[in-house]
Amino acid sequence: MLKRRWPLLLLAGALVAGLAFYFVPRARVVDVVAVERGPLVQSIVATGRVATPARIEISSQLAARIEGIAVREGDRVHPGQLLVQLRSEEATATLAAARAALAEATDRIRQIAQVQRPVAEQQLAQAQANLELAQRELDRTRDLLARKYVSQAKADDAERALATTRAAVLAARAQAEGVRDGGIEVELARSRLSQARSNVAAAQARLELLALTAPAQAVVLTRSAEPGDTAQVGRSLLSLAQQGETRIIATLDEKNLRELKPGLRAQAVTDAFPRRLFEARVYYVAPGIDAQRGTVEVRLVVDEPPDFLRPDMTVSVEMIVGRRESALRLPADLLRNADSDAPSVLVIRDGRAASVPVELGLHGVGTVEVAKGLQEGEQVITPASQAVAGDRVRPRTSAQAKGNAQPIPGFTN
Image (cartoon, rainbow, N blue to C red; front, side):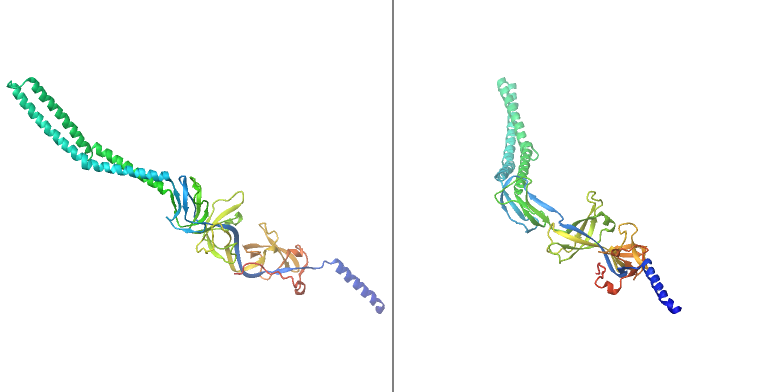
């Protein structure tokens, strides 16, 4: 009897096993990445331009013909070096006339001291002597008139002569006082001399405007004129980049503002010399935000600028804002809800996919630090596996995963 039922029992068992295999959920094969420890660097990358301490525009303050230009683009100039020589006959003639007027005013002072003053003093002395003589003559005439020896007319003539000599003394005294130190003639001559000197200084300054010199140590960027051209007032002839601190001005997304601070170290590289890195550091973070672009301006100083840097060169800057030598790290693309305040990952726990919230630390290039939520070695399910929380899962075996390894990107320096 048992032998007859054995095939039926075997068939029933196979049927039950088949139904169980068909209706019971099978574990999904998923790709996983193990959480591991390693070095991690968080940086901010921005694009900027090399800026000079100041850009100087050389222009003329008067209209004149350009006689010569002593420099070309790329030349280095030092303070006081002649850059542009202008020519103006009017300015030259004005200076010559002012110098002639100065010489005349100087000669006038010398003439008063050496000629007019002695003559005036002599004339005053002569007038005083004549006055004394006229007074004695009048006294003698009056005595003779009293004795009836002369007529009244003779006495009147003596009085008129005395009056005339008195007037002559007053005129001579006024003339002498005018040419003495502090006198009106001397003061007028000194005033003319001072005015003549001022005119010479003004004409000299105007003439000096014809020689345009370098105000500081600089490099010639552009040359916008040639000899023979007419320099117009205010029109730039040369553009200079003043030498000094080499700076980089960059703009970053405002979301990075919390990471930025003066003293932050950075590495920079130019598009023209991509293999030659150089150091820079942040010295200024703008207090305001560009509302239209949503960016913040950052300025960096290059303490030891390489010789190939030029004004306005495009520069890529990487600012290191965080570094861990041993961070629990994970590829950033394994995060779920990465842009929310509560990111999470799917991990394998007890044969099922479990959603685990994580707290993040540093953000490297394609890699994040897991500050809380995971342990080293835990297996995180990739989004490409299309598993959801609660699914029965099993990790792909080594043979299945061959050729599908996913190394963790990021900085290792």
